[in-house]
Amino acid sequence: MTRRFDDKVMVVTGAAQGIGRRVAERAASEGANVLIVDRSPARNEVVKAIRAAGGMAQAISVNLETWAGCDKAMQKAVDLWGRIDILINNVGGTIWAKPFEHYQPKQIEAEISRSLFPTLYCCRAAIERMLPRESGVIVNVSSIATRGLNRVPYAAAKGGVNAITASLAWEVAERGIRVVATAPGGTEAPPRVTPRNPNAAEEQREDWYQTIVDQTIQSSFMKRYGTLDEQAGPILFLASDDASYITGVTVPVGGGDLG
Image (tube, rainbow, N blue to C red; front, top):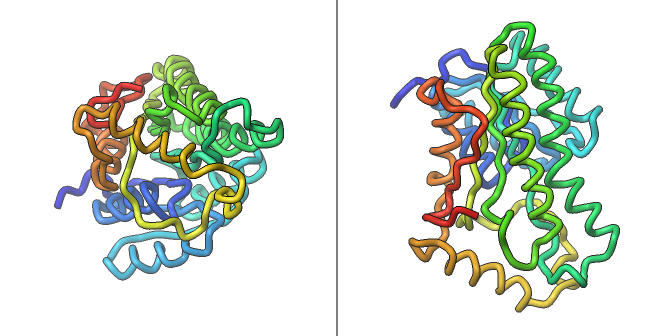
């Protein structure tokens, strides 16, 4: 087992399940002090699992769709360990899947709030604490779905994440901070502990969601979904010193689909 993150302080948002949880667990196994940021009560189970395996983790529940929540989360890491070395912006995800003409204005706003503002605000809160030390890495989790069907608002949000990644990286590169992103494709994961929208099934047709599944598989050269480890691996590589000369780019992780 490598120890790429010995004594590093890593904040992982949306870490109670899915890709975020796998990233947090693997980072802790490589020596990171991990702050789990998630509103789901499952965040406490992740902390217990990491500690049981000999790792170090703490958790905090905040609303990352607000500046106050993001600022509080970053300050928590500083209060616990004195700094932030690595931020993984993993919060986000499609709430509804349907043709654009069926989205209501409030639903469009909700998609943007879920999948753009947590990354935007957390980047701002993190660099405030990284710049004085002239050191740090931010890995944003974008999506292949910036070009996809039945998810226009989500695509717009993740397109914004790509723009944040490129523009912020350019601003802070000469001050010792790298900003990079991955763009996951379809990913096999256990059922969500906390659904993004428990009423979504009542508000969209099954065939609208099936369109997403079919398009995701068809667009992948490998004609399959990826695994959690196939997504966590590239995220952790970009977060590590192995990627010290990589910044400002979004790496597609979609089995050949470039988004």
